[in-house]
Length: 140
Image (cartoon, rainbow, N blue to C red; front, side, top):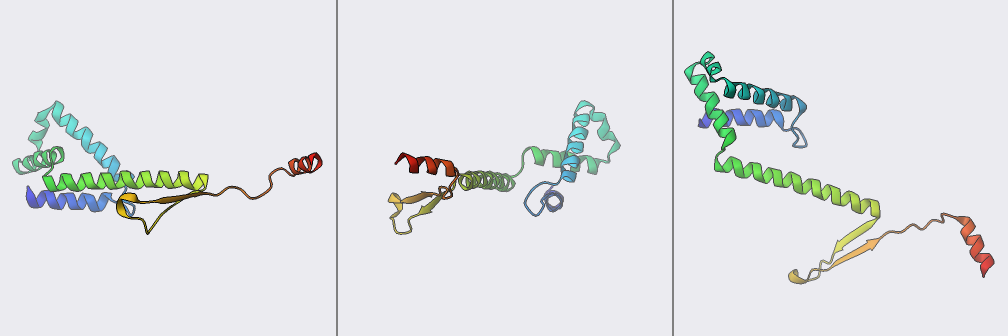
């Protein structure tokens, strides 16, 4: 269970994780096919008879490891998911701030419990409607 599962997991990890830590479409399709196959085995366990005892044990062990991974693998997966969610949230927040023109700067001199933030908002400086200025001039 140890070496075979670890080498299989590292092979899948190397295969599935792209340059931006995203699962490729090919691996997603393979996982969907594996899910369908496991569901077929659940419906009819006699399908396992086609495998040797060693292959059957390996398959059931791998399925068990997916269902209940060891503590280290669970922690790594949880940390990876949190990191991805945090990065996605940061990207969303930065895009909203970029659209509105709001900038936030942390005060580097404030003490830890009393951290200050300075916010600025960029507003347009160009004239949008020249007719409005003409009306203002005539009104004065």
